Length: 92
Image (tube, rainbow, N blue to C red; front, side, top):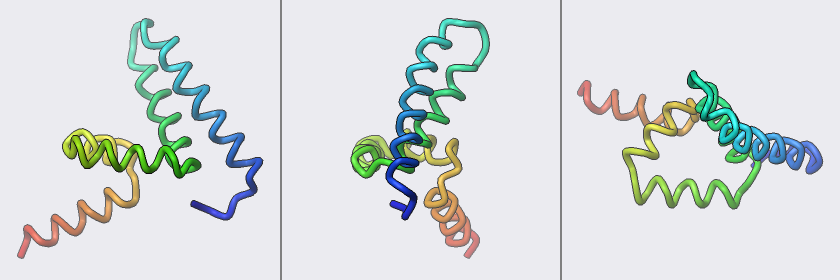
């Protein structure tokens, strides 16, 4: 986690949940708006909730291809490091 103030973390968690709920509301409308809202909400929740991080790791272990796609789409630092490492190992 980080050393942010607990009130800020709760505010960001709430914003993440609202974005995910908003994605469900916007999803029937034409265009890809719901995808971006969902991704933004997921990023906020994963950065501020240990519980969500543990669940996300379990999801990635069960479905590694899906977890890898989500990591790359969210541009998570861990995914970028893994990608760079794998690219370096392939070039040898």
